[in-house]
Length: 138
Image (cartoon, rainbow, N blue to C red; front, top):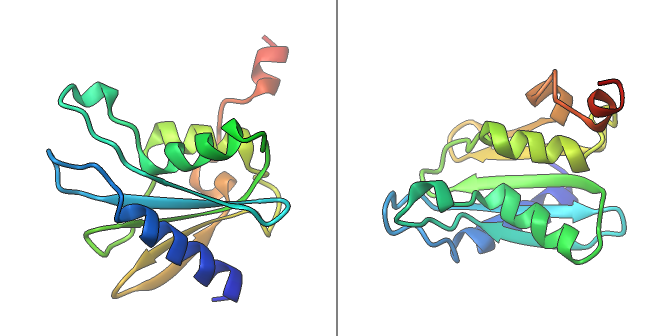
């Protein structure tokens, strides 16, 4: 694992500590890296009306986007169980909007305390994402 991934995973762990998960007790943290090296964190935020809950991945991405960034180079995701926290379908779709699925440097980084680090790009995680090209051709 390279130093950049270590830093991103630590930022995700720091974000996880801020999670608001009173219903599931399942805390998730995410950290995104932008083209110019900025890191934005995010945590899951639950709500009594579960549909109003937001995942850590989208919180981190929306945090970066709200600050003017449109390209996410990497995202690290960790959770309180210590196992891989695979992003949900909605988060994968959002990642595909802001990550380059063809770049070998554009990675999703997951950590499991026992199995280690897992890295993949968004095309591996979501091979048939709906995109702006689908709208243009529709």
